[in-house]
Length: 567
Image (cartoon, rainbow, N blue to C red; front, side, top):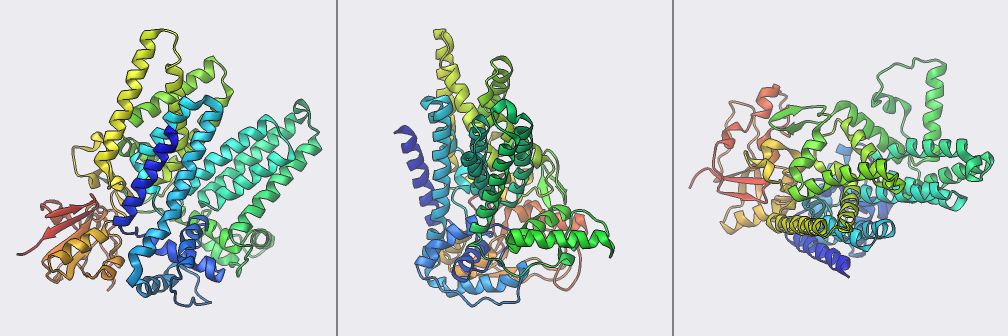
């Protein structure tokens, strides 16, 4: 009952927040893209993200009869659909808040489902008390609360990784065809929640290779092990195709795929090129072409990198230590301490007690962390969310173990430690409400939060509604601005006048200027102006340096800084 109450409290606070916060800049494109997936069976819009998060978000909008402009048949690239999405939101401007609310309710439901899985898996393997601790950490952690209400791939992929890990664990304990199919289906589901989950395929293949080698010890024939591997593969392929409603759109050309390839090489015009082209065509026959090209787009994105900021520095290809640092800054200190203690406890138990079940928590968390050290896309701690449930479960199991100590004094100390940790965590969750998105702990108290991290860590566009209401309440219908989510400002009755102009050119005067935190950081400032004038790196990251030294009249959600320029 306590776990149910915690998840109910979590749901209530997320629902309250989505009633007052606007959608993020990513949701502005993902929600209408999902609408076209469902109503037209067209998966071209934003095919660089898989369909699960988009489709579940759009389902309520279909039921509510949202209006939508017709989709062009020839368009394919991301930019081709931006005008379409703008039309979508304009056509529904009269019921904007209603549609934005209901589109995010399924995201909240998925977050609760993940919390339920944390409870079920922890209770099954470590008991009810450990499950209570794990769920409490999950339900009160600010990053989970922030992204649990957002239509994006992060929480669905966290759910999928947890489901895959425990499904694989159960299969390896007692392999049979049915469990193999479950593992394959879980892997397929993971791949359509976030394309980085395609990295599960090597783990799955390695598991079946090991099983094939050890088949006689497991009482299996090698032919039986091979049959189980085939069942898993078939289930994975089926799950991916089901997510795309078994629709196969026009295939992508091999030339386009090659131009985006992470491997820079020329296959020439001979046998090698023909073989690669045939292989690419085969992939787009087995899997939906939009799935294959979406994975390719993400690989190309990784090749190019993405502008990012960390601790006052800037990089196009990121830092190997980005996610550990972001986790250390964005996680409440009691959770950070419990996570580190849980990892140490888990490794010690594994070494001393040979407690093999801990591998189902330690291995996925370690491999996922290792994978992210190679990531060139360092734009938010949200990418690390799939590791969080494993950390919470480890911490819950550790606390339960400490409370089982036979010595009374140790039990009292453990109880005091647990009580202090959860009281502190609850206080942090309350302190951050409703602005969990921009939360940072006490380690980030020496400078503005935008100095430490940028992009979705400090700004994602979900405070645009509050900004618009504030300006309209003061009779302002125009604002100078540079912020994520500016597209929504006009729908809330405020025109944005750009303050991003070539150096030396005059900026149109407005009473107020609104700047996003990541623009103040400098990492998300574009390098090129419309006329073609390009900024060097120093000019780019310091373009809004003047405003860094100004005192804002108001800060919205920690993400938008509003400056009064004249009375």
